[in-house]
Length: 390
Image (cartoon, rainbow, N blue to C red; front, side, top):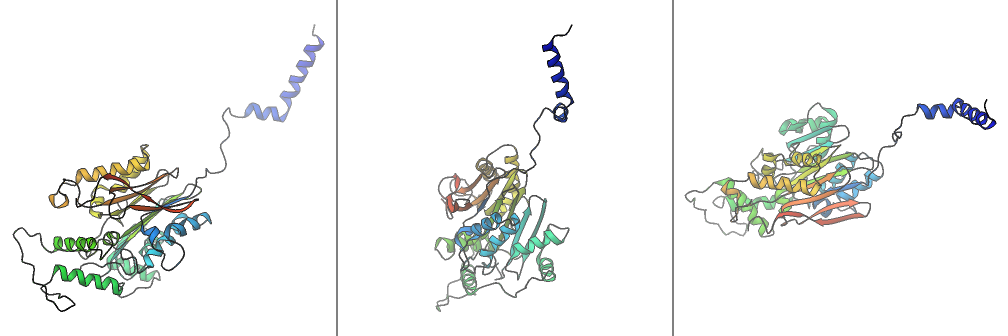
């Protein structure tokens, strides 16, 4: 026999099992459904000090413009390039773009690279002449060719074909004046003092390393004397950012080492050295001695360090230790046996965490960041105390 209570329970269970909602619940997987909306992060733009200092007569610096455009919905790379166009076009910034310190022949040669994290594309130019904004040419290489890097006359011809204005000379009166002063210091027998006082020829000593070393020494002396900024001597801006949907991009643009041998290409246009971006991990870029960065492919090393779980600061310091360990030539070492040059990295990870690290907290001691709290400058985390020439 079945009791009344058993009958009611059995009937209720049958009705529940027959309902569409019950059927859906029984067929649903045990795990929670995946979110349909992409995870959001707080946008961050990080740059070297040029991204803070120069405004080209306007009201925004590079990090402010890039951050504003990102939060207005512009593509992250387009926003970054619009940001670095400010110092590229500013004649007061003598390390980047128009009015930058030229090579040993007095010719302004520029390098730039860009990487678009979400599409995994990149573009770069090296030793390009006559174009004030090489960052835009680098993006055109990325957008319109199957290549990652164009150089020299070929890069200029490509830019002309893309509609860029090609100028005969990117020097300003300031950059020409500084170049002439440098020439007088390295070749006083032929380049005379503008005040009419002839300088005596520098006698060649036994073991004299020659013109290249003298040129570097003269440039560093001009930095010490305050004639040129240290940042302009090495002459680079790196700017990286993460957007609200987690997309990461980066750009680096430079005139390279002041008074360089014509044709010299530093780290800035080389992917993995002057810039590296992985949209699933983070980004890193650099300013300072490009040759040290090139030998170690430091930006790639930093991103791979973050892939292993290191924080931006620890990944950057790890790269600096690698550079220090691989700097063994006596001409590149100071009295303490450490590198006699500075190099800096700007690092950003997928969570929006960031850091600025340097071999020494000397010369340019701060870097720029822009977040929802506005733009600010922060101190580098140095690997070594003091300065590179101590």
